[in-house]
Length: 387
Image (cartoon, rainbow, N blue to C red; front, side, top):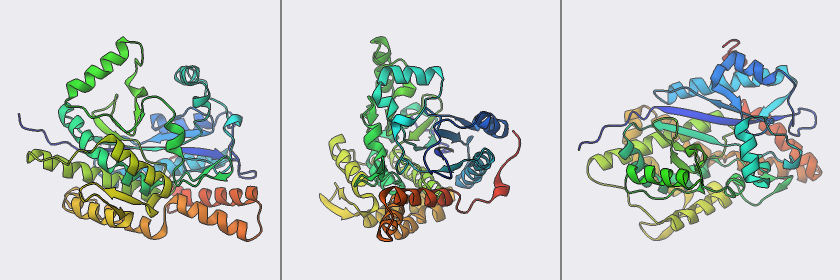
């Protein structure tokens, strides 16, 4: 049976943290009316997350990265305007440099009440944010096939997004600490391999009938078939502090999937490697980010991450041109040159300490940098004022 080409439309979700501009700590309970104001202006494109100090935004279906950039710019600008109006600031990062999870307050929604009941302390520690990228793949079988193939590239995309080097006021020694916190949850981490869409559906049925999990949205893998949309959802990435970095990752994701589809349409496939092996690369990406050497399993050797990025660019170059997103894909080189958010946060922190600041003051300097960098290249007139 011939394959149906995927649309590879895009949908991006981002989560932001709300901070007090004076203390730079998280705002455990935003002023009354804040979320209502956001929803008046953005409708269903903005929502609560687990904690009151978090805000989630999501684009509608975007035909290309240009449309995704336009919507994400509008979303950031609009939420930021409401944040300022209510005397707060916001940061796009996967962890806060010094906030304590014990001080946070949960959003009172049934889904989050059940999550807190089921996960106990694990849910309380989820003071983390992420970025998700949906790519439209309408054929069920193809969606599963591309998930199997694309898993190999997840550590590379994580490394480019790292923004969580701190936890509770201390450098963790990891460029991405968020996957460590999130990885404590069941049904998290890298996905299993499935021989067919029927195998995927059978697993969901077993989970439901045994009472283990009756909601496919609670399968929190690093990549998954969306339970709500005909998409393959990239979930491994940290929140990108710079909007353009988020767009670069979306462009890479879209291009990788088109390349893998074309291989599949030619009765070829990207070689599938054991989950244990890909997990090792994921760990190296968490630990070192873009400074890592990741394993190239084809040649059985480690390579500098920059070399691997160049190989990926060459792999997807033609398909990125077909999609009209080659400039965005090539911006991965810029991330390599200047560093990810995690790299830059650590530089700000080290400079503050070297100038005589204490650890708390240095962490506050990181928050100041994050506030400014979150809005880099975004002008106030990009915000909408009504739904």
